[in-house]
Length: 218
Image (cartoon, rainbow, N blue to C red; front, side, top):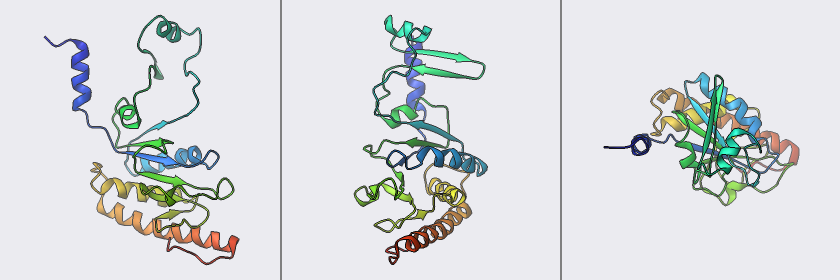
């Protein structure tokens, strides 16, 4: 007879993990602000989104003295709490972004803030005033850049406020064989066209500030 633990494990094994798309950049570049605007834009396109965030700070997430913390300190491997408005799970690290994504409710896409060192497709969030260094210069997993100056290699580039064009691009990326049946070919074409317009806008804005010639088409 299969116990509850084995049944739960079998259920998790059968469930496919949705695509994970990382959004990476230095602190202060505007990743959370961007995602807070991108998620509803994707929802309007029929994309169900889950979100997760990585932190390098070693602080505990649970509050000392709370029931869940007391139970974990007593030896429970994890503690969860649920109420009418939501739930929280406190436990050891899941073991990486894909393992963490497997714990989330079903979604078409998981957006992951951070995880620069993980082998994930990612969109770089770049701000010239925060850092002159581009992640895409050394990371070939970057598929697009949200930037206020031209990137150092040819990539789809989006102005920081052009969230609708970015949402079209992400929906098109999902539609390109990444298990999002509702993202149509029209959406993909619209994303490519919008990303081109946004890239030219970002490049033109940067050229106006720097006085330099645009180095990339986007």
